[in-house]
Image 1: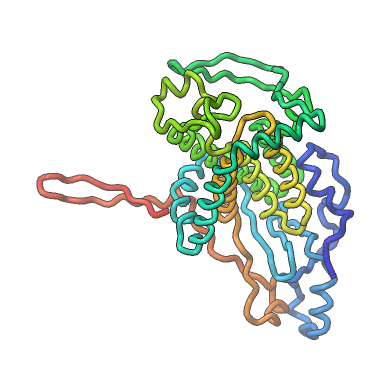
Image 2: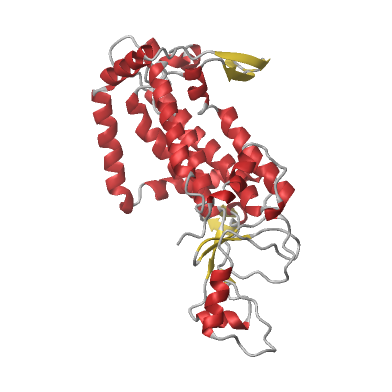
Length: 391
């Protein structure tokens, strides 16, 4: 029997759509004691409850109810029987400090031996899709014409502020789509995911919900970490986008000069896709932090499917650009989530719950930027100090 009922799905949609007027289900609990599968508070001056009473207490409170601590914050979340996560409070823009850590952990996380089959699958799928890239692109665009779906990715510019750094043109602009295909394409736009992350942050701040605040922070670090790697790979591979391709499946011009790349970006930035990478990072972070809402992944992947088709229809990407981009978004999302929460461990003797809270916190590591150590050294005529850090 499932503990999760559809009527509580609005509690996840609220931060997604800036709905801050939530119902009383999230109000501070008025009852003096909440019990869940990992925590049973008991008056130790009385006789310990019988095992049957403990079992009834554990099942009486469904996992989706999360009590507040003494300061009124929600920090511990039981998302399934026997699974509780602890989220520390976070500050605005603290995610920026974690991006170097995530980039440093990525090689070990992605290229470990357990991922050997996954990496081979990524390579094989990318090569297979590359072989049929032109066929897939032509088929997608033909289907778009058949259903009268405009291929052009057109948007209206609401805000445009010019900005240049040397020869690079980096304007600040805010656009909105003005046709259906552009709306699908906009699902991968940075503004869309910034709005999602900001919604979680606003909701978490108003409701004192640490999980929502941490989700916002993890979205920031996952999206920006993914973007840095994607943009680096684009500048290294130099693949033509379909709508400017000069030959079937496009040309590859590896390692274009910076000025050459900036002079005509679509000629070099197809591989890998940044839109699907960002979308995958967003879906994965939310799904990992809210596993009790099982609709997150099906809905998210469906929207990603529409985004993927829109990019074929408007000629922005080839199908073979997708596997690596999706994998990058997934990996950085998993890294961000892993570093942003702590598992609450159930004691081996479940009857010990009657003697106290019934759970203990696993050690929470220090932030990466606090792990550095200075050490003096002498090497021949040189004397100084070194700073080392273990990620």
